[in-house]
Each structure stands twice: as structure tokens, then as C-alpha cells.
Amino acid sequence: MTPALLIARNSIIYWVNVWLAPLECMFDMIESELARRGVAPDEIDYVPHTA
Image 1 (tube, rainbow, N blue to C red):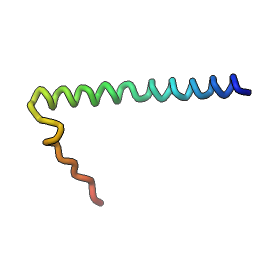
Image 2: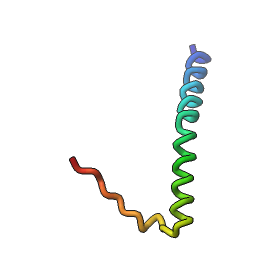
Image 3: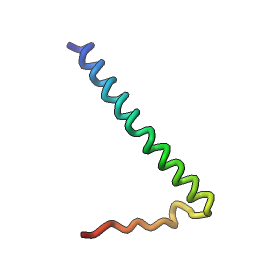
Image 4: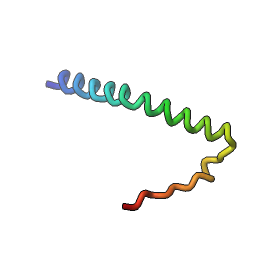
């Protein structure tokens, strides 16, 4: 049973990493574009969406 659980765990970790890789790349591109435009991370104000 333990090998099957380890395989299942590794599969889940693998697929989560595959799913998040494009998002991580996109966030890196956004951060680099903000840095290129001279916007510091502490200058960005977060305004929560209110419904």
C-alpha cells in the first residue's frame, strides 16, 4: 500500500507543478515588465474587489 500512496503523492505533486508552471512564468513576465517601467513592488496598491 505504501508504494501506491507514494506514487499517487508524486503524481499529484507533478501535475500541480505542471499546472502552475505557466502561471509562474506569467507572473515573472509581469514583474519584469513592472520593473522595466520603474514601478517598485511597494508602490502597487491592492484594491480588493467589492461586490
